[in-house]
Image (cartoon, rainbow, N blue to C red):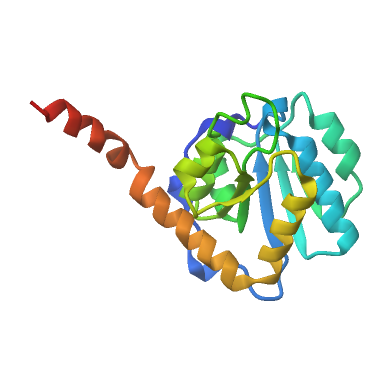
Length: 202
């Protein structure tokens, strides 16, 4: 499995100099353990939809696990997908930062609706746009920085990615928002600051 799924990605944020050119396909990455919580079959269905549409979107999938076989059945043979079962933790930040978009989770399970996956923090820290499910916890933390789609809806996910592929300005806008959010709220100092302030309050 992708053992890097719990590692921070803030060490390798991609610069504008290496950003996507106008004629390049949108590059999208998902990494994880393919658990039911992550809703990876939704991602697989969205990939198939975009492939049928001929949308300029390419996917990198990293990891393996419970739902991986289902996703393989959906995407194997598509020339818009590359899949790696394992990436070293030290190598994941740079790999994420090479992409335009990172994906969060899309399941409809009770747990999926109440968690904020670590991968959305990692994607933001890497300077990618983040697309994930529209749940109360993620909406509260990510605000307007992320692109939120209904849980369990592959068509909505495909539509959101196709809009990013077609609108470079929208992509740059969301990448800037997530990077700014990561700088403001996801660094060690920003996490510790309110705790210290509380401890210092008489």
